[in-house]
Image (cartoon, rainbow, N blue to C red; front, side):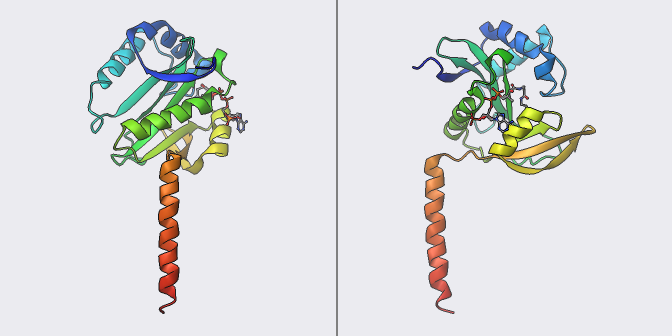
Length: 199
Ligand SMILES: CC(C)(COP(=O)(O)OP(=O)(O)OC[C@H]1O[C@@H](n2cnc3c(N)ncnc32)[C@H](O)[C@@H]1OP(=O)(O)O)[C@@H](O)C(=O)NCCC(=O)NCCS
């Protein structure tokens, strides 16, 4: 394992202090959930939810959160995907939303893209219901909007609780799936082109 190689791991009680440090930082939390910083009770509750979520069957599970760690077991941040039931949002059984927040000391090191790759791999492997992964970004979140505009597909602006957010669609297909669908599209195009000659 090289020094900067990352891993996603299940969240445990021993992560309490790292999660508390992250979730009591207002610079981070202004962009997460309801924008409020957490207290110790909320951190414990979150950890317990994560531990219990691990026992839920994938076809019923509504949230998946992991810690991001490096090869020295340093805590880098939290990443996950979850349902978000709001009438303003896409919410079929297969739509999920992204959560990611990194410890400020660990930002600007390329860990965002690395963690996203790991999450998508996990999603494709472990979540049979997964169809679409969205990222919902507050308009005030300049960095995440710049990243998302560069990497993902902008869908629309959404107003939630009197606040404007940008909705992006993340490509979660792995290379194999993309290849398969390109092949399928090519086949279909060929068929259609052939058909055209009959008329
Ligand atoms: C958003 C967050 C996870 C990004 O992590 P980060 O370590 O700061 O991001 P990085 O600096 O590694 O940049 C990520 C990618 O975006 C690119 N990027 C960075 N700034 C960019 C910009 N201004 N324009 C376009 N792309 C940009 C980088 O090149 C990098 O891409 P690459 O890995 O393919 O080279 C992190 O800043 C964070 O935790 N913020 C607070 C919480 C938050 O806002 N979460 C998102 C809620 S929606």
